[in-house]
Image (cartoon, rainbow, N blue to C red; front, side, top):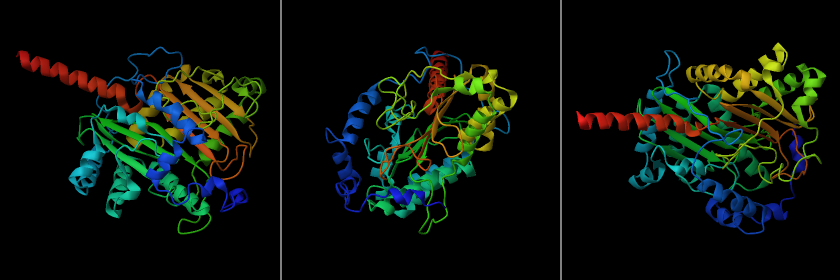
Length: 424
């Protein structure tokens, strides 16, 4: 525990905190929409992006076909669907009929795209867990635990716990708490048909879909400010991003000087050479965050296959740290998919690359975008990125975020089967 973040606490009566202290999630949502405010500008900018029909992130605007054939999972690579179905049914059984209706959406519903990572609730999709009884909160966590790897559940729940700690540290418990998250279910829990769940709120957003024993886990946003809990019942808990940070620094250290320079798109986190808008007020250097489902993200940096062998190994290690939320079987399938596209994978960097430096990096291929960024203060008082404020984003480009490409193939197959049955 460093406690470094404590020197950046706002005074208790600072306007940044006092203006929203005591507001609940719904009152704060209205406050956040106020024109002219920082949050109001984000809402205004993001709203039309949500309304756009889903296509998927691409590097040049052209959607590649055939990247995600829907085939049954290989033996040993199946998702834990039976356990997930049981956990989802247990959650639904704990809800009133009204709340079962509120939490449930069609598997291809556009509401998938309402997730966001700020503390304000732009879209009230599904159920807000902080207003649910403890039994519902625990059954929601049980569904997440049944779906993810042990490490993935630990990381996701750590983000929620640290969010609660931040709320206590700044006196905004009604805005920032362990359960200030929305959860929604998409499709009917089933062993083979497509269905999934979504959790989102401040610094944690996870979208999970399963079909035919396969699992897609993206988009995923995980972050923390600060990255540790130094007091209270969770004292000693840290945000387990060390591996993502260390392996990125190790990759840069492994590169020859000329390749390290070529990978460094900008030397400063806010660089005079950046074009207007390259640092977003909310996303900062991230390109694939909330509401960016159709964004064109041009390739930058250097090809991974041009790197020395050890650096290539570290690039794949970065990918592994991001997909570690997946259970072992689906993780193996996902890593094989990433490995197959290694010749089309690039790595780019912004900022310093010495231990303790703040930086941004992106590993990008036709089937993966993994971003890590250090951010400025939001509820703590600092205007330059700090090592203890971290955001990470995972995307599946070319149309399989939310498992959407698989859902489409499943629906097409069912329609074809229905047509054959009707003409038999």
